[in-house]
Amino acid sequence: MQLPIVAPAPVVSKHAAAFRHLFNDERAYQHFQHYLTGLIVLENKSLSNISRCTLASADKSNLSRFLSSAPWHPPEMNDARIEYVLKQTILHRLTAAGSSFILDDTMCEHVGSLFEYIDRHYNHSNSTYPL
Image 1 (cartoon, rainbow, N blue to C red):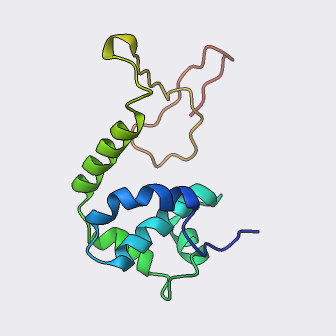
Image 2 (spheres, helix red, strand yellow; image 1 turned 90 degrees about the vertical axis):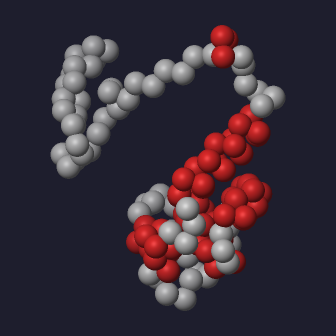
């Protein structure tokens, strides 16, 4: 059973204020918070499920319209996100010389065949060919 989203999650409320300046009105800002809350707390993270579970929205298409019409600017949002993350982690980051970032998702199990460039790869750890 899924619980309804009646208010933004406390962690969302705490950090969303840093992005308030990117939204023209309070409703867009609320949709932003409800969307993030849905991504965090719901098992089924689809847009339709987040809309269905959000009680504060009178029309279930509001969230979809918020994301598709973009009354905010995605590049500005991304820039603000990166700036915020950098400010929040400054005390925990190592120097560039002492850091490494390794990303290899080829051994993650994927589902479906509609993704571009998906193929089977040999997993040497268990001698299988995951999708």
